[in-house]
Image 1: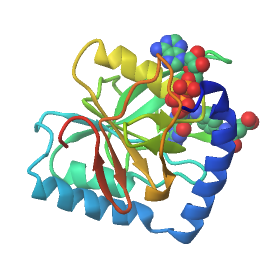
Image 2: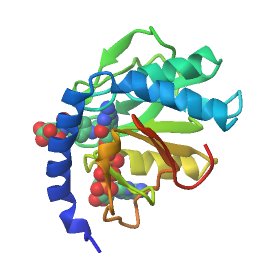
Image 3: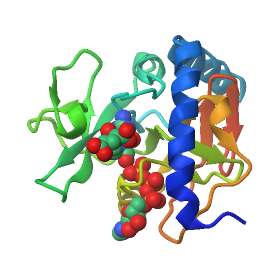
Length: 200
Ligand SMILES: Nc1nc2c(c(=O)[nH]1)N(C=O)[C@@H](CNc1ccc(C(=O)N[C@@H](CCC(=O)O)C(=O)O)cc1)CN2
Ligand SMILES: Nc1ncnc2c1ncn2[C@@H]1O[C@H](COP(=O)(O)OP(=O)(O)OP(=O)(O)O)[C@@H](O)[C@H]1O
């Protein structure tokens, strides 16, 4: 079994690998959106019409989720993006309402996010980037614990689905997990959708 103290080493290795995948698959975001659309049609697995779908502003070698978000918006879903709020080390992640084409502002880590005027909302589905995932739905992120904390908070209020967005090569046999880790319900990859818990 892998131990949690191996996470930093795994992070470095998976950053390197993800960068290589991104270089060889510049259109992964479009491929992933097509695959997701076919999957959702085939399995008649669209979320309820009033569901709010959260994506993210891609940084470094993360897959661009905007083609995927566009599919949801075209079908009438409301969208959201994460916002880091607060000062210094103590950023907190919340979600704000967003429509494609809206003006965004540059936030911490140079991540673009909706302006403070945009309404804070609680998404029902959260698509999130990651460095690695495994077949149990455990996720390795940058180590800030932002997604774990926000999912724990949202899941205390309502049933919130969390899906990873990743190159299929980011799958590992096992990710060391800790008690605070929030599991994914599935992973949308450029090679297909991997269902872990609930049916998507
Ligand atoms: N697109 C996106 N948004 C996100 C996250 C994410 O992973 N991806 N995060 C998910 O938690 C939070 C931000 N966490 C971040 C953590 C590290 C770095 C970063 O640039 N790390 C550099 C090293 C920086 C340094 O040490 O100076 C790196 O890893 O190379 C950026 C954002 C919230 N929003
Ligand atoms: N629900 C929580 N409450 C308080 N602290 C938490 C919670 N979840 C995670 N953390 C803190 O965040 C730290 C990093 O967690 P972890 O290594 O799982 O991050 P990650 O999932 O890789 O990162 P991210 O979600 O930002 O991409 C943990 O050491 C822990 O102290």
